[in-house]
Image 1 (cartoon, helix red, strand yellow):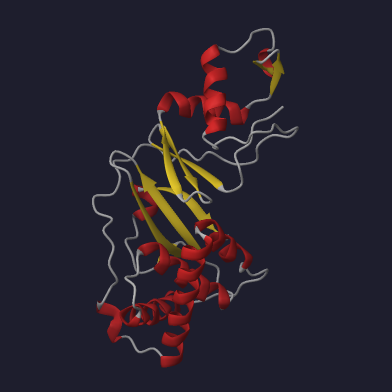
Image 2 (cartoon, helix red, strand yellow):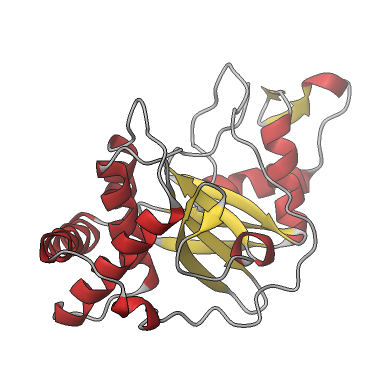
Length: 246
């Protein structure tokens, strides 16, 4: 038997602790190192359950400790591990991004300097409508369905684009935000820009980075290896817990 993480739960290391993002419950969970070690071990190995005790298949002469059994029970109750077991290995990858002090400043605001760039009113209207769609999905159906919508918009083929073309989209989106009745945060902005890019068959991802001590999260858009209209070092200073749809 194998343990799995639900498809709506994303995991990433920040330093030596795992951080979980549960899209359906719209919450982050920081997992202490000892429990992170158990979770990592449980996802990389095969087990057998005998009289309520777990054995590792690779060393099935020895029962694992009571702490392991209790930790697995806790992780299941916390909905980080699936309740049922599987007959095939977990295919996800627990990315260890190495040690990082985190980002000095991830306070986000729209770049008003690029508003001098010329964009069409039609593109601004498109950005405004996209923002409405993002807010509707996020506030009515939740984070999970917003990301699901982005994944569904992934084109089967994509076309090349110039960095400047994406900057024109971000300018249009920034202008739309000035007319939008609700303050736009980084998640909504990034989701809207990603959807506008995917509509044009451009390869781009919405990414969410996290850190702990103190906990912080931030969203941005990445295309052609570059962060669009935000700090280029974000993928290095934060651990990327979500990158969709590519």
